[in-house]
Image (cartoon, rainbow, N blue to C red):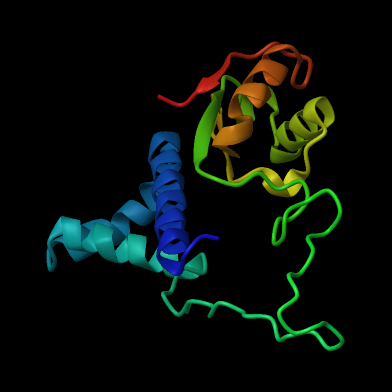
Length: 179
């Protein structure tokens, strides 16, 4: 389970990616006036840092998150003292069905917003081709020319092979691990 620090780092990464997309898109003339007015009073890097902090806070990354304490289940009634609890059928104790565990990796898909790709297209292709649950797929980032998908390391190669063998929105796309 990700920690609060992991979530905050991920939110900052998403904020950075959003800002990068906005800079590439251009059309900043209306807001440039505000920056130019502040530049006579403050350092330009401080202005940019304050803008990033505002954008990050507006997206819910205000730093008020707290760690959730680990839950220790209360002993069940009716069990013999010293008895070893049995795992659920087909799984080991504590394992959730259909959720891969371990490290995550990012997969590059060579189609993005301009090709009409949406997160649902990627999730649908992955779950439809491999039969895995959508909740095992991590963050999806759609850029203009490409998309990035966070996946458990244990299923990444299977997903890459499956996406290479199928079409997304009618297009054959390049799929590989992010470099």
